[in-house]
Length: 172
Image (cartoon, rainbow, N blue to C red):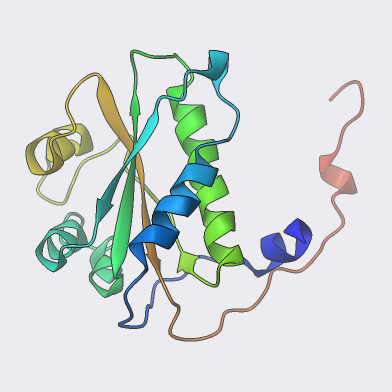
């Protein structure tokens, strides 16, 4: 049930040294792509990084936030064509969120690293970094990195909470 998957899904940063099946990953990417899309434009695409040298390169992109990536057997770079629709950020985010829930349902773990705006530890923009290192050139932009693998240790499930103070009807 989707509610159970949401309760279980946590950001994982320690992965087992176990390969992720490509066919399974492509199937999950297909389902993740079925989310809402403005005018059915589907501007989101993926770069699947499973080469150890490329993963090491990504792990060194930032001084702290990306170091754990070297443990991930695969990293998906979620990209979008910004010329296709103006809602590419939202669509890439929805697709990434769908992907994370699908991964959890399949026994895989993930986390999210925002790379839409900002700079690497080397002080170059993420946009320039992905253009130089992964060929992501305009009109394409990278939205996030989703490292994927089998988690090394357990994580605590989310707990249900009273949302009533955050829900407003008809007026804020």
